[in-house]
Image: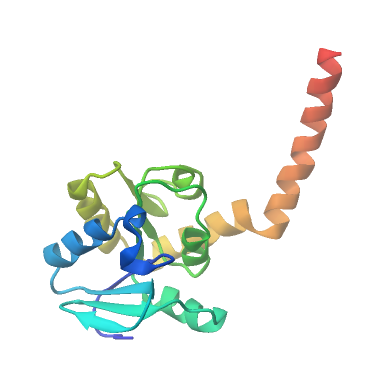
Length: 177
């Protein structure tokens, strides 16, 4: 992992062969940011082309965590998403996410606070997102990412949400019957 240069990470099952994960946008960004090193995790094999390094799927959680921590940001230019764990994993490591505002991404990322939500399939907005992250204090945004995960997605935070939810559900049920 290069420690002396900017690093953008992407991750998806089947890597660049997974069209729905926006590999075409990753390619456009590598052309737009030739001085930034990109790393794509989840490919069939390892190789390097221009400023992008392709790696196989990583099953070791410690190694994967080291990739998240080394990256300046995680790029998720998916055409569609549900509620991807990769973005939560990155944010738990203090790594902000730049993604298209699709599916559950807006439930995970607070736009321009702990990441960037670009307009779906808008390459210029995706470029703005990368520029926004690089213009923001790395330490500050890392703290915001961690806080988001701890407050909304940690086990304790989720238990609290469920405990808050059940009395409301019971009250709603009683009011209807």
